[in-house]
Length: 119
Image (tube, rainbow, N blue to C red; front, side):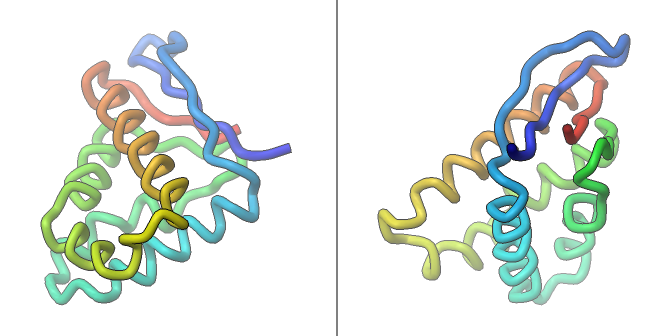
């Protein structure tokens, strides 16, 4: 049992899905994101993560307008710098693969004016 993310377009048609991992893994993943967001001094960048950190991971949705903000945060140089030194080794390969899955899902939802659903 775990957490899957489904991407729908604006007509609510299935586009793609990816596995966010077990609920425990996703909680840890989100904790790592939070810890590193707090290292960023720019409050505007920190605010981009609000909808990722404070959403329901039980049938919750993130609409494309919020996806844009989250993606902008994930792709910001400040966030990349916060992650860089702490998560550089091979042990964290799965973390970066998960982050890429999230970025790809966000991009797909944005492109199709859709949303992500947690199930």
